[in-house]
Structure formats: C-alpha cells, structure tokens
Image 1 (cartoon, rainbow, N blue to C red):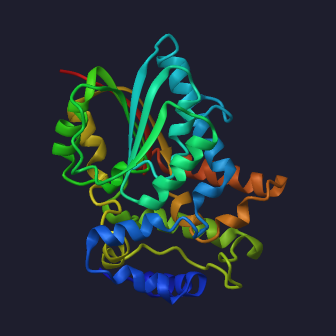
Image 2 (spheres, rainbow, N blue to C red; image 1 turned 135 degrees about the horizontal axis):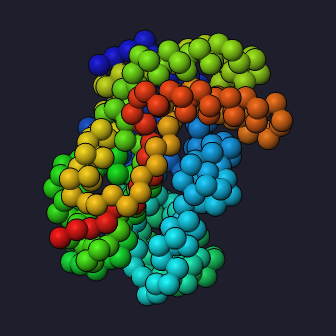
Length: 322
C-alpha cells in the first residue's frame, strides 16, 4: 500500500509544486480529488507525453508514418466517403484530440464531456478561437449524464477510459447503447496493471536504462537533484491523489473484446518509457541528434520487452455488433 517511492516522490512533488498542492489531495470527497487533479491546468510536469519523438514513435506504430496522427489515419482509412458523422469523446480534457477530428469535413457534430470544468472552459475557448461550429464541450459526470440511444457513429477515449470503473456495465451497456449500428469505439489507452502497479521486470529494465544515462538526462524537473531509481507508486498514494486513476485498467481490453468486434489493435508499449521518463522527460525534448539516438535505443529495448510481456498502452478500433 505504501512504498519507499511514495516518500521520495511526495518530497520532490512538494518541492516542485508546493505544500498546498499536496494538501489538496486530502479532500475526503473522491470526486473533488479527481477534479482537483484534472483542473490543475496551470501545472506543468515532466512525463513521457511531452517528448515529441514518443508521439512520432506511436504514430508510426499506428499509421505506419511518424507524421500521421491517428485521427487523420482513421478518417482516411475508414471514414473517407462518410459525411454528417457524430463523435462522442468521454474524458476529453482540454479538447486537443477532438479538434483533430473536427478539422475533417466528415463530422457534423463532435461532443466532448469531462468532469473538470476548467479543462472544459479551455476546450470551448480553443474551439471558438479556431471557428469550429461542429465542436462542443460539456462539463459533467459521465456516469450521471443520459446519453442518446443509437446516436453516435464513434465513441472516443484518449487516455481516459482507465479512469472509469464498472467497465462491463459501462462499456457493454452505456457506451454500446449510444453507438449506432456498426458504430466504432476508438481507444488510445493505458491498459496496464491497475493503479499503475508496474512489475518488477519493467522497473528493473527501466533502472538498467536509467543507470546508463549521462547525468544531464537524469536531472529532475525544476530541481537540481538527479533521478537514481524508478519506483512503483503505492496503492494508497494512488487512491489519495486520484481515486479514479487506473482503477480497472487491466480489465479494459477483456471487456471491450467481449462486447465489440476488433477491427485493428496496436500494442504501443509504454511499459518502460512511462516509469523511466517520469520527472526527467524534459531532458529529452531538445531534438538533438544525441537525444534522438538515445530515444531510438530505448524504443528498441521496449519493443523487445513487450514481445514477452503485455503492452501497457494500446490503440484500438472496435465495432459494435448486435
């Protein structure tokens, strides 16, 4: 429930973000803690997703091209001759992924829903500034919102489905019901161990790589300290910080497979880069030849690793079957 890493990471988080951020995690209301986590739009961090080459690496695994993002890939491959399409994005955050679909004329309506009002405000401002009339965002609890029956052509989850629980009912009833006949479910998701309980094998591999890095790549975000080891987060810290984080993540794929037909599924990895780059990712965004070479080596190591282990991240397209 509690690990040595919890003490170390809490200490560094307090130095990076201040005592008030830590104290905000001790709200007794679970929904409030979740909102506090996702409403923190002003807080920057250093994680794998800020590294451009990671995005390009995953683009290539999905579409075959580093510069082709999955929204463009899906539209071109599956929706090229379709029009007046409707898309629902649940847990949309600040709306950056929905806008990539909205750029295509295939969609008459794209709706994003998220629990965090601040993120929804940011999303609506972005949609208005870009003049998208087919794009709208709403703040609300997805569990409590009544979704229209057989209305949407596509339901999208980008790094959000792992925050939902009661998956068999949620996916098999609520999501399936709101999709039209032959509608598509698209996910770009963490599907690894619940509560991000990284395995000993992946932590050991991440430590091996960390120990080979030059000190300039190991400097912690906003601090002079160097990262020396990768730790598994304790379950108690995960629950206190965000009760919804990876609550049933390991059940995502089995549940989807039991209710939907798999159109395509790509195993992206993430097993090594997620723990490895935590708090040091900012050291890998300079775009230098040396940094790119190191990243390429890490991607190769991870690719070999997931040949013998389940991938922690997956991109998938699934079709509703009656």
